[in-house]
Image (cartoon, rainbow, N blue to C red; front, side, top):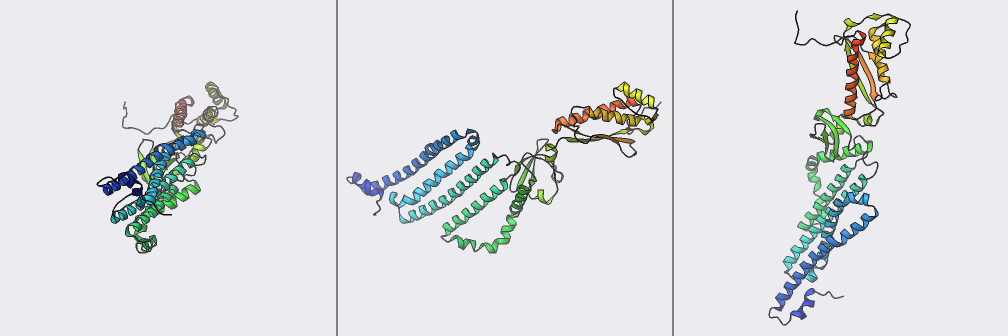
Amino acid sequence: MTEIHLTQLIEPWLQQSITATWLTSSVANVIGITGICLLYLVIRRLVLPSLQNAITRFSPSRITPLSSQLNKLSGRLSALLCCVLFLGFYQRVFVAPDWLFSVAKVAGQILLVIFSGLMLSAFANLGHGIYLQLKFAKDVPIQGLVQVAKLITFIVCAILVISILINKSPTYILSGFGAIAAVTLLVFKDTILGLVASIQIAANRLVSIGDWIQVDAFGADGEVLDLGLNTVRVRNWDNTITTIPTYLLITDSFKNWRAMQQSAGRRIKRPIYVDMNSLQTWPVDKAIQVAESIGFELEIDQPLSNVSVYRLFAEHYLRNHPKINQDCVLMVRSLAPSEKGLGLEVYCFSRNTQWVPYEQLQAEVIEYLIASLEEFDLKPFQAVTGHLKLN
């Protein structure tokens, strides 16, 4: 089948013109450029948005969050189709010297490779967005793997662009990579380490977006915002952002508070130091009388120290506190005597694991128990300050 050039269709309309040849070429070029622009606008503004709206109607809750990724994909797909159309028909539409055709062909091929890589990147982002809507996506982040796929795509595109520019096969370029392998490994050291770390983090579920982690080496203590290929971003509790290399989460130690947040309670472990000079032995009747005056029953048949009665009172208080988890370990124990006095450690778990309610409950419990020491003739131990009142 004989190929027909666009100028052959235009010449009969312009054959009476003095400059028919020049005018025919100009009209053909204008029609070609206008046609490509109109094709881009029709696909970008009409066809693909109509398809997106039709898909959105089936599942608005799932498709609407992906609108930004779909918009990028539609723009890159439109440009890709225009590049394909140009390379397929430029010789039958445009009129230009051979050298300009050669330049246009190379430029079209380069743009085709670039937009192909950008479209694959948009597909990767779209797939990641769909994955994030799954229930287990938060526990198994794949952002690092997505970034690796995009990095490989861009490397392949770069090799193809270079091969087009120098008019050599891509294998010719790849054959020279062995000589610069050491430099490549040095340049992409963090990326390679980050890739290995991302796979281990995803496989072992070490860190998820939204986890509360603590990395003392970097001063990070807060919520994970982003798990990237090279870095992990943490929003600290003072609203500052700490950036940590991803591979350091594998090579160094860090603390993840996820298990505590998902557990039945958060531990309260605070000591109250009692002045040992205030300890005394109480007979049975006095211990029972003091207990009744405070509002709890005490069943004993032998003398106790006032600190023992206080411990029983503290446990009674904790077991009747509505915000203390009664299904977890609960006790008030004596620590070894020290220069600070006799330590009584409160050990229990709060029902609410959120930071602010937990701190409020802990303060409420400790402050009440310290204020109750006087009821048992006990005195809290406090180091002597710089203010002394002399008689």
